[in-house]
Length: 307
Image 1 (cartoon, rainbow, N blue to C red):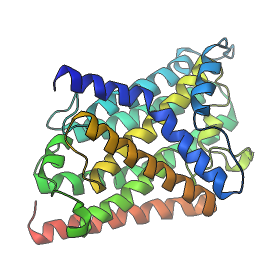
Image 2 (image 1 turned 180 degrees about the vertical axis):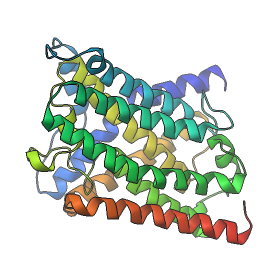
Image 3 (image 1 turned 90 degrees about the vertical axis):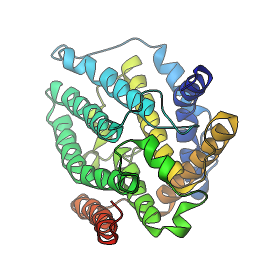
């Protein structure tokens, strides 16, 4: 990639995620008949948290301190593997889809480890649920990545987008639409959104992700919240490239990406504002169903002899 393309990629990756999160929250508020927080509220929250001091429990170790930092670093590196405004990514390589999924898992692992390091049974409960939901989400993620990459006969995202049909691909290839549906479910699960989890809940017995970060404050909490916004942005970028004809590079690609990200964020807000959260025992079945749907798509690809 050229230096201007890398700079544009970094600007999008570092600055746009809180805005995407703000759009989702705003749309959810509108559907509930409320005005809601300003679109730029996530930026103000991050600035306020970064200006506070860090408070950590006496019984915690370096694991608790490393959790937010490693989680944020993992999703940022994952964002450097995903093409945003162009057809390539700064750190992209032939097998980057495997590294992408591994980095998401690494971030989840350190978030759970930080929660367990507090010694709180409450946060341990959240970590246990997060591990279970993650185990049900990852097969769907890998199968979606297989659906994206098998037609290109490559495990690289740049090669997959290059082999993707021009225009609105899912109109001519329904398997892309199937992959998009499953990827949207993965996006909701990875980002602890309704109907998998509720990021705004305060009901102790139903909390999953939020309960794991209750002891974080100040800059640590800012890293957690920023990491969540970056993860939403990066997975949504995959969804945008899958469904929309994003021009390869330049400001036109950046505008198309941001428009698609806004649409995905709006869809997340619509789902959260119109669908009730699933009961915890029903979440595994929902995630397994999404993975099974992706498995059907992979089976169809092999039946057609495309791989």
